[in-house]
Length: 239
Length: 268
Image (cartoon, rainbow over the protein chains, first blue to last red):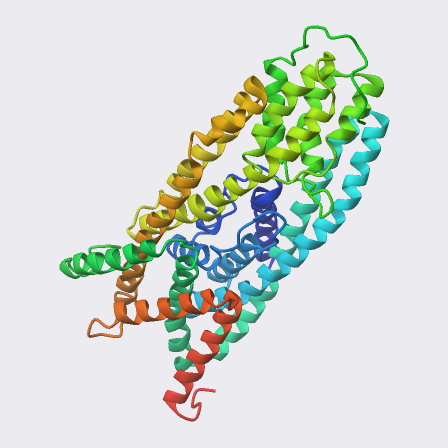
């Protein structure tokens, strides 16, 4: 139990740091699922599962884009919660099979919406920070102005850390209960979800971002060409 | 805030290279305290602060801080060009060569077009293209592919951020035509073609993975199924159906189908 709590604490720290990169600081794309989720596996292990999760979660949340004042679902919260559930399940409860991966995706996805609500709340709270900056300007105090973004960063860090940790903790409980309860039929159904439905949905989301019809046509051509190539390969030629 | 120059024109003071580096560092925190009313105003003023501190004191400093706390909303990377240009103009305002309204006017004019270009290039083209390229690498067993993603993306991100700031500082409003020469809109278009092509590759790779997973369907049907599902989801999303709704709807439909197939829920 203590080991699980320690892992959750570490996840909170990492989640908060990745959350900062998403919008408030740097924006180096460390917070993207394709980077953040495999990075978590450096700490929590289960690299193949983390790589698969990073890929499909990146596709699934591809359209979460920070255009202007738009507040999309928070893909970092959603992805890291899903990854936290799967990886901590593997460390503390049992093997991470396709059914657990499906449960992790399903349980983590709603937290992206909670993350959006938290982001909107933070932007509203930002009005108070702007007022503090105005007061610093009226006083001509550059140091006071410099403290305002720091307060913003702390709020963003806390929001991400809290959401990811609580989401993962609750998700782990639910995943543990469900995985123990479901039989072979639903296990097969969840595996089909993992192998077919979730990747296909992610690919659908990604294709919908293509703004040029000829780009879609190219996609079909490349699909057919690669299919022919893969058909020529020995099974297992690719990992 | 909008007072006329109060001192006789004198050679414009320069903020120095070290201050420009401090501004560059602070530009990474543009969105640290964003808000719905004036958007990125706090981040902009925070980034400008080292330069303003070198140029002004007393009431002039207060006025300068206040004019950079006005509404500002642009793309966080390309906004560095506005920062650089604003610093150059502030130097001339401090020397009495220009009225402060020039700085505010430049920000007002530049923020919109730069936001549109940055959103189009970085958010809707480079990021998805680099991501699908990386996923293709990972699916083919290249485990360092995320590092390549970071390198490719940040080559453009940090490169354009630094270029914008330094050229903005050197050329003031002349930075906008300089940025246009990169033709980012055209590059964004090309990114969409590449995104479409790589997405096709990914459909085939995921179908291949499914074929070799614990759940093969046999008879080579996996690619057809994967393509069909992808197209169904693609069309649904084009019709504005939410991703999470589709995820849960498809999951319920699939699990229900599996249960019905097994008849009378024998395992529950």
